[in-house]
Image (cartoon, rainbow, N blue to C red; front, side, top):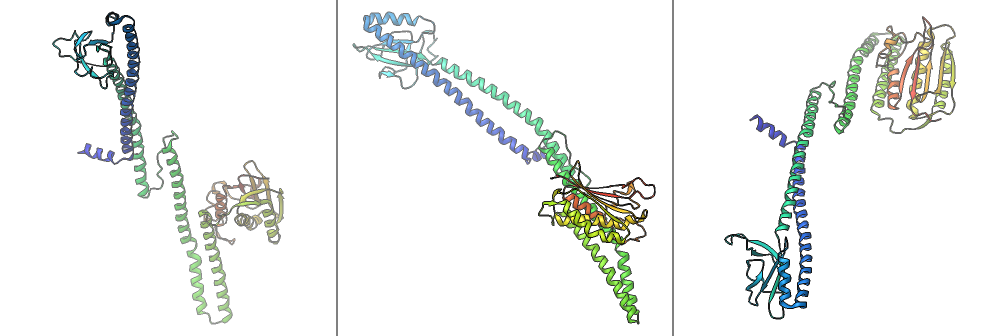
Length: 471
């Protein structure tokens, strides 16, 4: 029962069906090849036989013309004694055999002159009991006195050749067929096992285990390329699911407090009798509501960037000009915060990207530098550097603030993650997440490192690395 079930599964397999179809096609081609080659060999041999007989007839007719019936008899007798001799028969006008090297002929052979239409049967003198019959073909011609002469050739040799060629081809094709089955069994079983492993991994993935990956053998064949592509897709899906889970958790954690505060302030405003106090409470509620809206807008922006829905059009953009415009825009803000804006922008550097998204990412980095970079020494500065790096075009924004510890740099780019536990600085914890999403969309990366070697205030350098620099 188990074997029957296994055979049923194999019969439904596309690989088995394709293999069966190829075997049938191979068998038909092999049969055609066998009959074609043997038929062609037989035709060639028959044509050679007819040509040889035609020369014999010409020579025998010449002998008769030179010496009459006696010369004809001597010539035919001499030729009949030679090894592998042809058939030589002289018959009366009524078809009775008068001389020759055959004992009897199939009736009707002498009825018409020329080539016999079909192979005829004859009996040799050496055949015992007249049981054994042979096939031959020949040419009949008539002498002036009505005597009929047959020069023929036994067809045993063409038949033997046909049988020999057919047997050789059948053996060769049988060996090829067995080899094909063995190769299919070896390769086909391996392919089926790999498909079974892929199916098993797929079932686990369907069950919700997105950490599973399709097996890759390392051979680099179609299965490996397909598995690698699907594994990349699974990794991306797992990353998006993890991000969704993280966002959900962070929204529940980070937005619950401001929503609760809004609700409490709204309740307090209802209880206020003083119009000025009620107005102040409502203004505070509006301000915090605006902050919540900005948070949701940032989340929406990150989601749209990660999905690629807002970057359908990429073009060559002047990254130097974008950096210069952003520095000019934020320079008054930095001065108000007691910081100096220093620019080192190489001119004429271009990348392929979306101007609005790149400008948004750079604005986020500069805004972070202004907020967190003023905690260092007096007269601290913010440095914006645009240069052609080894991997492409680099935009680096450096500050002289407390920096980010190396073990926190992976966490700080996640959504809602803020190292300022006291939340003393305004923000949502989404700025670096948006920058990283934008860089991933452009095929680049975001790198975080220390700005300078200082024990208390190492500062932070956030570098956007764009691929494909075009000067």
